[in-house]
Length: 363
Image (cartoon, rainbow, N blue to C red; front, side, top):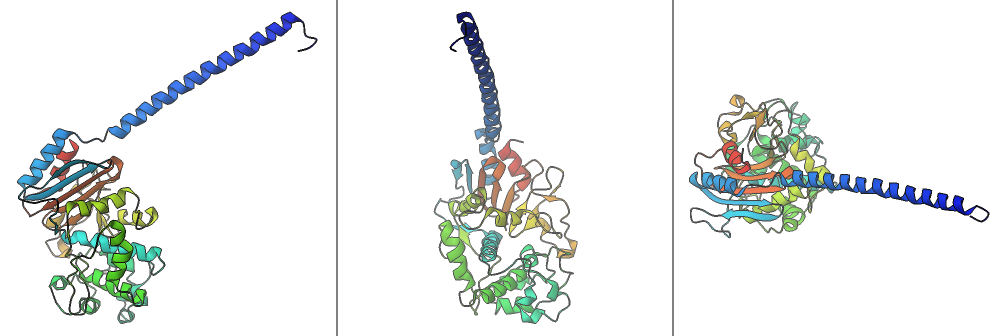
């Protein structure tokens, strides 16, 4: 400032100081706004916290309807763990169709490893299907979604019906591929044959254990092998509540440590035949306006009498909820938006997904 009169220098200095003061006031206002926004976001993230009274009400409802275990985990913290009816934390129980999700996870892993493509034709691997006009159009994904149109083949659940894979491959197509949801063991046994051919020497069971189960901290399972050594993919496993919750953790972690989030997201989109089911998982996407009913009861009539339009598990539960469902009300619920995992084992009774979830969520 050489050559500038003293008054001018003082005036310029004052001007600079005033600018600094204004800048500091603007910064303080911005920081206050950020603090308010942080508090709003924090309140929103905690809005989904489960209420202890609601937990107790849901636990009482489950126990009164032949519940054998109930495990509730939120934000990684165990909120409730109970084993009514003489159960225990170390007692593994049947999960029935909960088994399916693990084999579907193996399918996703195989796709990520480049062994197969879910949208490839089954007939490219199974020669017996190449000359059938409808079987030749079936994709691997349609096998896993139960939308392939294949006869369900419920006899394949028997302990030793013969070679399950060969029998499933020989069953007739009873609906146009992609047009109907036909839930049963046969499509998964055809998938087992496809995977066995793709692995070229490694058994599908070994692949499942190496690529999926070991990463989840699980060992060999009750596979119910037939005389040819083929496991039953549709059912059969026993897991503790804690063990099954590991699948829920995988969902909350976006597929890690088994597959990528992009691969896992295919489980939530449903199919044209049933928007509420895909790759071993049921979704709640139709909430809050969907049709709420007992999934297990809907599976009792033969497939032409079933109606899956607008299916949802609970109209009052978040739309991002997904579930593994096993017979006699075995349940694994996962709600990513609430960072919530719920495992239930049961022994039949008049259980209701909708009523249980409304109690749990305080609706």
